[in-house]
Image 1: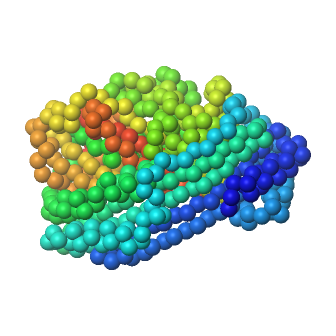
Image 2 (image 1 turned 180 degrees about the vertical axis):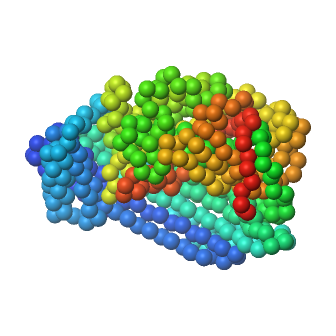
Image 3 (image 1 turned 135 degrees about the vertical axis):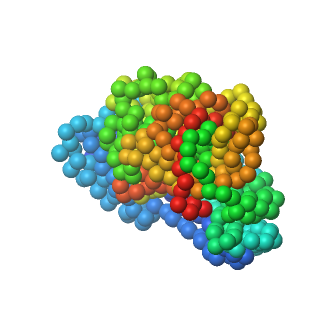
Length: 485
């Protein structure tokens, strides 16, 4: 599948769209390769290799959208799909009560390539599986470990975007991830501890730098400590949350509410509208003065830093919350004008060639503070330090929530003491973020990504990265979960 073929493909589709009288049209052609190797209990349980190709044509006709797609990559298929997209747009225009007006965007010609030192496709299968087997053996060296897991995942997307406005963009994007996990058994109780590399746009060097074999003994020891740990006593605690844990908390309570289509009531699937309605834009006290949340789709290696979104809009950096005040949304070319903004923030993404681009959470991160992690903990008389991801739930407006985690330590009189289990904390989003009274400095900043962010109907999986340093929250309500892992 070569670039000249894709150029001819795109030219034919867009010529068809123009001839039909559409005011706008674009085409995305994509070829994706995914490998996912997973080990369980000292054996390789699965090795999935997936390859997927297709194209989608999007048309704006008299202020209404039409979209059609096909997995048949032939020049004979192009006119049928382009005509179908136009036909759907015409049908939508006949019943539309409000016309779509796109925010302006300069024409772009560019090629975006993920910098890679080690191509995962060139790493022999035996080397990958050997690493996973060694890691699981290392986990089982600790007495009491009864289950183990290890995995390596990567995906490469080659994509071409062209629009009737003249933008031509070529992408060669890669993302990689690895993980191990150990499950301990004691007195009839199970507990699991995990270590995950972040999902980042890097090569296989991410796996080698993470050194799963080095992490395995610690993960196994903490699984054993966790399974024997006492359950938490319910009550109010100061919480110190690590970056991996904060990535999920930010994603659910800050990321989704900042999607403008949700705030406007256009999107209500997957627990989705938003309490951050447009009347709160620029005035609402989202958090304490310690809380500054920045969307940055330009930071190298992060998942949403793709150069351009699926509107052909250049990726950008902007504030979501500045010194506690809510000041910005994630937008696309369609919804940005609804709040008077002249340009999209470049947050329109689809999860593949067969999906319509929708507003997506950006790479939203919590800006670092000035303290060390030890200083954050030293000021806590009664608290809990939480690492990693666990169970969670949040209401349809992204306001009332509860979160678990992967590991918990009691903090007493400024010292982290022993592990706890079954910790669940809950709160109301603005109250929780207003209780933040300290953030660690930039040396503690870490990045964690998501590739399974659900949104839309039919459902799509979005990709984004959330970065943070550890942060402290005062007097948060903690309850005891039911046998949490």
